[in-house]
Image (cartoon, rainbow, N blue to C red; front, side, top):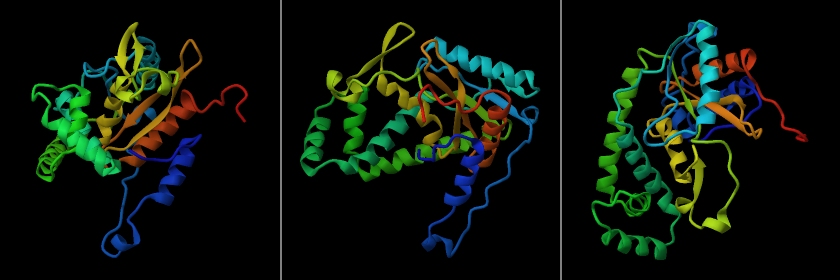
Length: 270
């Protein structure tokens, strides 16, 4: 889940042309050929829409902003479905994502912390599926278990590929809510921190769900402005495409940028 930040889709496309492709050692045997965009106008696209999920409830204000954008896209002639979904259990997808994510980031642990987490993992109740438990298990994941999780990832990739035969793009939230104040000193560990979503406390760590939805299975995603909350905080829409459909995501972002909303510098921003 890495990528450039830019003020326009045109700049993103330029950055993609510069950074995409194999490293020199790999370039000896293969090259990257990304497909052109699937359409040149909003009306050319078949769009699936997913604005909420039981695994990460989205704040009503954010959903309303995204729904207005979706309605605009439909009014422009795009084929839009708010019921289309890949044949994927999103709870399973998120569990695999957290497992592989935390396994990947465990490399930063010192040997002392790794041994501590290993001991903690041994004492966990197998029924404990809290984020803390999942994180600790993944921090100390065996290679055999990693291979099993990676195989689950590849099965999910096939299901997404099948979905994108019928739909060009999926529109979904970037996060559960708009930006919230930093609270590192007040709440300690990130997985303990809470924010308000629809008037109820929700873990900030839930936001990993919307990043992991495409990130786990190698799907490109482009985020563009969708509107502002009542407090003036920006809300974006995540444009997810099929694997290697980067140019389609960016092209659609450009269409929205020109027809709906583009980058607007906040007050006093140079």
